[in-house]
Length: 362
Image (tube, rainbow, N blue to C red; front, side, top):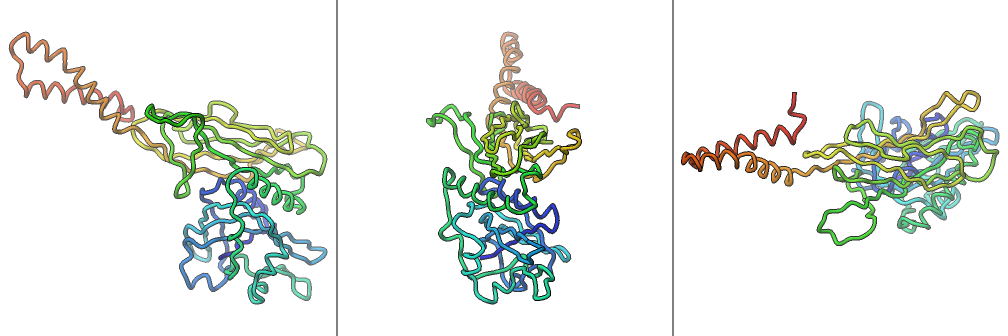
């Protein structure tokens, strides 16, 4: 398996850890590395389908120590090498439980441990590899279904990370994860009752245009520190015209833990369209609350399927309905012919297409 490490060297790297925790299982996100931080062995084999353990490197510069905090399991979808950059596209897996720095290092071979970023004898560093291949299979005993155990593991990881200055309570950050995507809409012939959880496939959701959905967002902040005067918000939005949030698109995180729901629907249409939902933390400046910074944003990719089959049937109904009066008149005048009726149907179909596909209008 692979170990992919993020650090506090830049704000973006630390935010990537919150993003990795935020993604629902089965959706895709990216990690990026300069070639010099990648284990040379990775270039010698195909990495698609390889299991991954994502870790955060918590550094104590004064004590010259670097500690791994395991955060999430994932699977490699693909790896792209662009110039000197390695770009890993990952599918989110389960959260990590009962695993810490000591357990990780104990499971590695000596040569593998030596590659993990660390300070040298002179106190320089930490240096090493941030993307490396290891023989251990930490993911084998750590698979959790959605529910109580998964959220317990999520909270334990958030608590471990909060001890690092990058994630201190005073920063306004809150750990969050997309707990579920649900709908109560269904086809009329479906026998299922109540809400239906939608699961992603191939890194994105497959949804239906015109249906109503809601996201369940679980946020958690470990205990410690005084409450902020101006708490952060967890906001959902989309720049795609097909997606429209109907209620509760923004949630004030004024509690250490909460389960919020954001409802959205989509414009009914005939053809399938791709769209995305963006979720981010909006963190106000405590000294100047009007200044708000967007942090730790994730995008859930979706494809909204249209109703092309039903649309074709509607075109047929409209065409026949539009042609019927003229056909009746032709029959009464004893001028009805099948070629003439076909032309009437074609004319009605053209009018129906113009009505049902607004993008064809000028």
